[in-house]
Image (cartoon, rainbow, N blue to C red; front, side, top):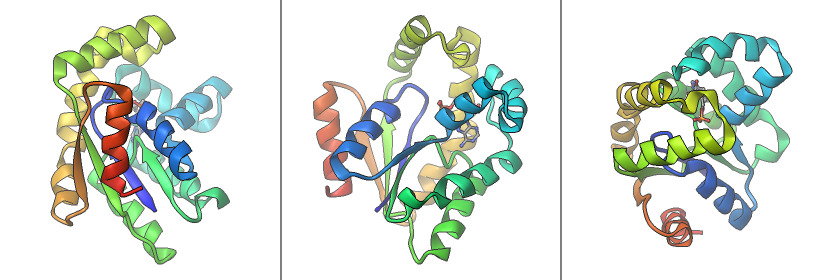
Length: 187
Ligand code: AMP
């Protein structure tokens, strides 16, 4: 089962992705985590990503497309993946389609997490205090929300048109949200 978690930064994709991964036994793959590890290790990917990442901008597709190919190629992803933080552009979504088609698979479910903007800002600000993520600084938060609206939101219509999109109300109790997610993927 191939599941895409879609939603603005702070919507709870990481938390809910982990819960869903435990429940289904599928691996959760987060491009943001891969990029943070690459920056920490100073790899070529990390060096290319840093200037974009720090400003809250998307890392360009020519860099990310190769990364998506790599993360989907790992053996544990052979029967399904929970995709957290990608695809984030139409070009990335088309790449995911292409890569899955090669293994006779397709995206099964797209969950769109909806959380009001003031709640997102509150969550990201407290994460900045707790984890010290540079892209959770106030200017970067505003930028990331704008980038989501412009570059990633078009994917909602892209997947809705296919009939595989489910809206998840991303506010309220963690377990309640997890239950909505579970129902959304029929797990
Ligand atoms: P995240 O942890 O998913 O919020 O991602 C943090 C940052 O990593 C983003 O603001 C981007 O700079 C970069 N990033 C993560 N995933 C992607 C992606 N699929 N495409 C482009 N940039 C990404």
